[in-house]
Image 1: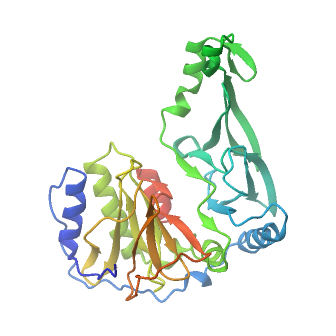
Image 2: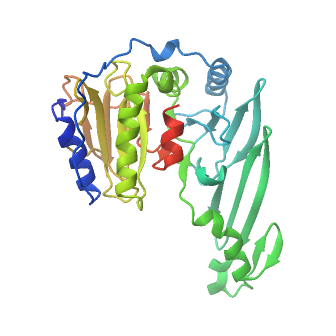
Image 3: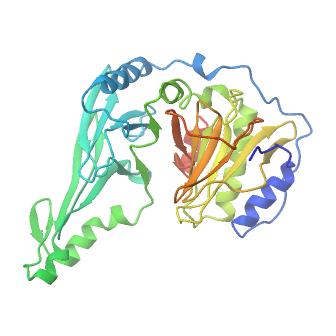
Amino acid sequence: MYLKKTIAAGTALAALLTAFGCAEKEPESSSEPVVINTGIDPKSVVFDWQTLYENKLNDFKKSDAYSVSSMFDIRDINADGIPELIISPNDDAKTVCEVYTYTDGLEKVTDIGAHGVFSYIPILDCFGYEYVGEGFTYGQYGKIIAGVFQNDVTYYNNAASAASGAVIRYEINSEETTLVEYENKLKPYTEEASLTLGRKFTFGKEAVDYAIHCSESWGAVLSDVQKKIYSDLLSDILKNSPENDAAFELCDLDGNKVPELILSTGIAEDSDCRVYYLNEAAIADLGNGCGRNGYFCFDIKQNVFFSDNKGEIQCWSLIESDLSKFKKSESYMECGRKYLLTSDAIIAAFL
């Protein structure tokens, strides 16, 4: 489906707020036309970590650990303004992620996760995982401090072995505890919203190039006016519907070097994404939702975003394209859930 950018700014915001069950008013149109393209190429924005991360990805791709199922992520998980590099060799149950950080150079922080992913809790600046084995559960949470992984808590229980007659045991940091103490210790982590990290980008050439040279550059590309338009929209949504699993991301879906705003409405199976873009009037949307489970995939090489529902592919494009024979390339990424929809995240995304 080739989507045309035709929705008016007021209609766009009203439609989105209605979707969250709280439409109150439409925004006022700007009296001055918005400059859509600032003329700044995201690839012209240079960060110290880029070359080292790109070299590490290229080295991994040449190693025996690499396979066609390998993916990676770039995300700031210690709130220092510099993203970490996360490499996921595959999605097997026991596969951990390699986590690297940048200080004066590239440093490995830890190996962590299960199924090639782990959970990141932004409000706590910590990350961890849970592995469910045959009759037991093991998990861990920690954070990066001064470039080093510091463990907050490890936990274990074999409650799933009760049916086999096993003596049930709960452990926190390798010490036996009661069920109540166990649950209370984990409550700060299990009650907070999290993001799943590790498998955002494939290792295709265009995907690596976009991840390294574009994905973290939008704060320098967008003008102050553009940032305010996007952040005001997100702030209005948050204000009117604070209790939800919404998330958002900036991503250039049409290759014009200006990012679209992607809003993930949640993580349920029927949660979709709404795509918003800048136009002369201010901001507009595409008029319909895309994706499932709160995300869709974007083929960076072909400028096509798509969703796979039990083998049935739905695809869309913002540029005129024949999608009838679309097949995903080796360069794609998951879109929609880079930031949880919080006040702090809105500020961080538009610095």
